[in-house]
Image (cartoon, rainbow, N blue to C red; front, side, top):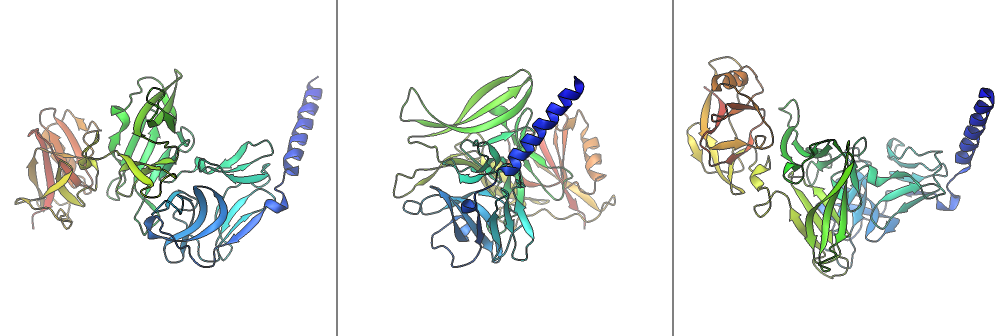
Length: 438
């Protein structure tokens, strides 16, 4: 009996492999596009140059674009020419691994989509060769998919977000769980900021070369709290208000396991259909909802919600680089530059003095009252701890740039990067900034 079962399993396996191997992309649907020719005429995000490819589903279009000469990214563009002053990039294949002119994008009968540089080096691919792919589509929601004969997705761009989450796109445990900011408008590599879906919610991190681990500057605890179980999936959705027919909400739908449940959190709204919307983690670490209205001739893009904003739940002072390398922030404005001799007017050149020696006696600290670091609001710090122990911990750590101490709670935070400090009303919140004595 066991041998019959094994033979049956073997037969089914052979049939399945045979079916997959016979599933090929029709020759008429294959292509090889070369990154060459004149650049497009229209204004696009980051003031980039671009080559449009004949793969689209309005308002989405696949392109090569570059912000640095000879460094091209394969990306999906969103917007329409007739109504949009700026066309925006909402998905990228090869951030941080650019290709040059004469690079190729090839879709072969085996079902693999391959981006190769001019010298043949493979910069990016879907790794879907001989997996049953029979076609490629850009769907109306901006999801580019490779599908089999039954319409099942073998690969989809929604599974590899960069800094943008489109309506219908998800973050999920065990899969695409984060957005990472772009470094700068001209340099298309990963930036310092990330939005990560973790078991207890969303967390935003700032990554500094001075710190061993990324630093938390925001969590979703004020939006939703997950006491039991873990967050498994979070999807951006557009939903019309059934009671107020002229309102359309952008909503986070999130699922929790152990025990299983799902909930919704309305994040922003507009007075028109906002299906063409996205969440963007910006170069500055801010989160913004943008929505595109293809039915208007001007001002087709609208920022409908900014997470860190004086009018929103969280002010701009919570952004790590709001005041550059070093600065005191109050009411979303940079108001002062701390120095050993007191506060002076803030400027973009404001910076703490670098401590180059760890030897005792060659550095000291200066004190600031009523000041917090951006990490403090969403982290517990160390404690209870005496202030002298907190200072000793910083002094023994050559990378420590200062420490923050709450005398009313006896809690200590070690800072490996200072960046933006926030003015607070509690004078027991103290900052001690390390500074050279010479």
